[in-house]
Image (cartoon, rainbow, N blue to C red; front, side):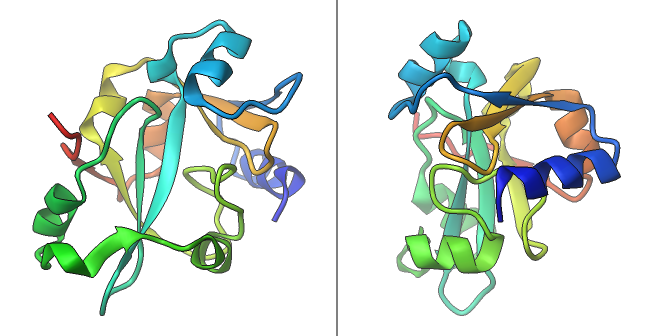
Length: 158
């Protein structure tokens, strides 16, 4: 899938979001924040976790947040060793987008989604836009609206 597919998804569903193209490829959350003139907490990340014996789970978090896989495993009611970051191939197969470009919505198939609680502390986020230089600027309130089934869970490492 491409940024154009994501743009079509946004337009078809009348999602209040703006596609943003970065002037250059950035390798870190802080570099993206600097390029956009925003705080690093406003850069979001969408991480797919493989759960052995279960369907994968997408976690949307602030880019600066370190996620605790043990907390995710506990929330999901499985042992810690059953939860790991999905492989790049699994990410593309499940979501349709490569690692580093994954949006929180508009995937090739439905996926259980968790919003890490820290996301709610932001008014708006810049999240994966389907391409290495593409982001989506979206208000968190709108993100909650279009992800009505998303669970809010504290998964940050203290």
